[in-house]
Image 1: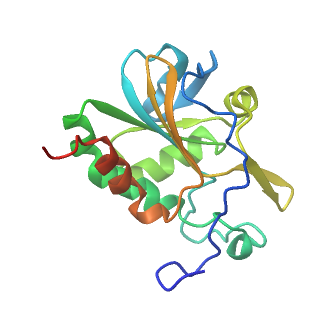
Image 2 (image 1 turned 60 degrees about the horizontal axis):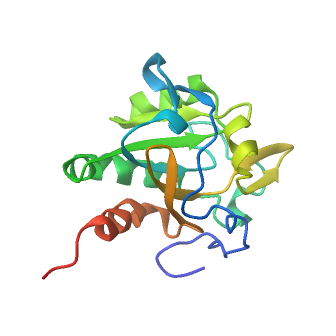
Length: 183
C-alpha cells in the first residue's frame, strides 16, 4: 500500500511474461458495447487494449475480499482515465478497447453511466483470455482477469504493461510513452 492508493498494489507475478512482442492475438470475436462485435486479431490499426477485472455498479457490493486482493480495485478510475485521454490517443492514431469478463449488459450499463466513448469488449466466456493465457484471480467463486495493457497493431502485440499500477493514472502514462521524445 502507499499513501495515494489505499488498496494492495499488484506485484509482477510473471503471469504475462509469455505475452511478448510479436505475439498474434487470437481469432476470437468479442461482443462490444453499442451492439458491435470486434475481433482484435483482425483489427488493422493501432490500438490500446486494456484488460481489467470489473467495474462496479452503484448499490452493488464488491465481490468477497475485494479490498484485500492486490490489483482488484481501480477499474472504474482506469476506464475513466482512458475516457478522458481518448481524444489524445486518437490524435496519436490509437483506438482504445477495454476488455473484461463482465457481461455485455454490465458493460453497456457502465459505458452509458460513465460516458465511455470507446468500445468495451466482453470476454464473458473467457475465450480470448484462455487463448492468450491471460493472468487471473478468483474470489467468491468467480474468476476475474488481472489488469494489463497491450499496445497492438494489425492484430499483433507490440508491448505489454503488467502489472498496471496505479490504475487511475495509467492512461496518461501509456499516452506519454507513445509520444516521441523531445529533440
